[in-house]
Amino acid sequence: MPFVKVSSGTQFHYQIPSCPDHKNPFLDPSKPTVLLLHPRLFDSYFFAPQWRDPRLSLNYNLLAIDHHYHGKTKAKLDDSPYDFQLIAKEIIMALDKLGVSKCHVFGNSLGAPIAFRIYAQKPSLVLSMILCGKHPPVETEENKEQYKFIRDSCFAKDDQGRDRLASDVVHGLHYVYFGDETGADAIIDEWAATSAFRPSNVLLITKIFSSLLDRVPLPQSTLDAITCPILIIHGGADVPYPVQCAYDLYDALPNAKEKKLVIVENAPHFLSWTHAKDVNDAMVEFLDGLEHIDSREMVEKVASEKVGKDMDPATQSLQKKKSFWKKIVA
Figure: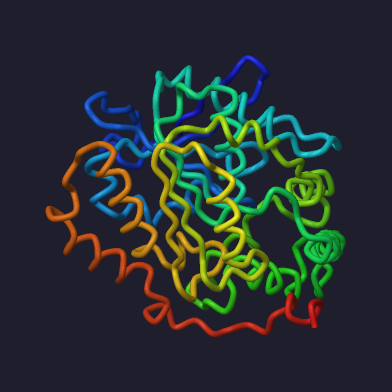
């Protein structure tokens, strides 16, 4: 299990799923590197739909890092607010230790504002950014109240008195991030059963929700300084963040050398899981264009069949669950 430790003491767990040697993974210097930054709650395994796509795994180094307070990464957990700048700084340190001097950055939800701060601290590192389901700079007051309600509900044990989130809380989080998509039920259930995100872990719950409630927007001058190519991907059915958030983000980046906005119809916030084919298609077209790689024709059929089969909710025979989130916004 690969780890890299930085001078602050944070020990990052990382994976290179594109490398055939899973015991001692390495980056192929002949291929461009794509850094995958996962959303909140989940870890790097969230990118399995991207790992399975041979258009990405055969032509690019896919480097997935569990960032702070997620997965197997070991970082100091305290009662201070979630610090985007610190997290970006330490990820840069980890990349330096891994020998990554340049990379494309795919930031999913929470990973997207981290990607921005990586660019702000070290622009030469970032070849391009793919921002999938990025939040607005700050939450609306309505969202803040709803997130506070869910956060506080996380401190209560489940109906059987176990140190696990109550089922209504799990269903509410499901709706926030996956909407009515039943294809995500399996990953949600596994996360609820195995995650350290439990009522007794007050510091962790508070820290993760701080990334929503205490987020400080970057100044426009920082956004104006972003010149790398940008791909924005957003779900047309994103519950907390309507598509206007994506258009506002597009307009806030006036100096990007190349920028593209893709709206995936009927897709929820965590669309890289539920609508992997659409997201991967956009990624491949964007990255191949920048790197002058023609991976689409070579593996299009294989990728579409595999990703479609693996991620099609119809193949999972899962039932919808009643939404807790709908109750509190009614």
